[in-house]
Image (cartoon, rainbow, N blue to C red; front, side, top):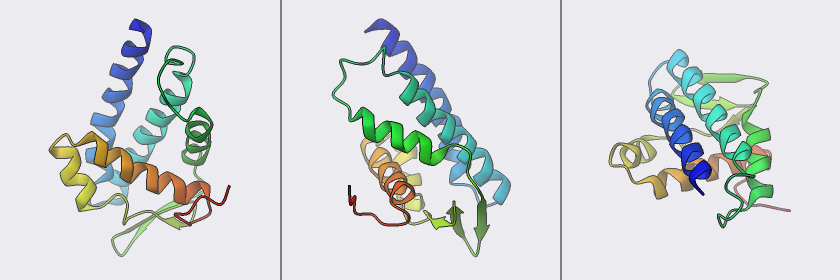
Length: 129
């Protein structure tokens, strides 16, 4: 479990750098945030062998990692963040930003999960699979 905790500390480091950028106002901020969050989710996926005892839906985490890596396109138009052409701004908005700043990681995780679900399900929040 010690190696799992070390992974989690590293993952938190990416989150701590990525989320503030993701909540920024410029395309460059958003891109920097997306890169950090993408890497963070990949690190979570990579931690599976060290953190196998955690109660986690590893199949869903693997899908999330695939959805966030190598975006076909990221754009920021009229205050909307589009990732793979899918609008995820509502999930990563001021509510998520306030939750991050108050260290409400549960809410941040839920919102990131919703954004990821939209990416996995081609824009839908309902898991059809």
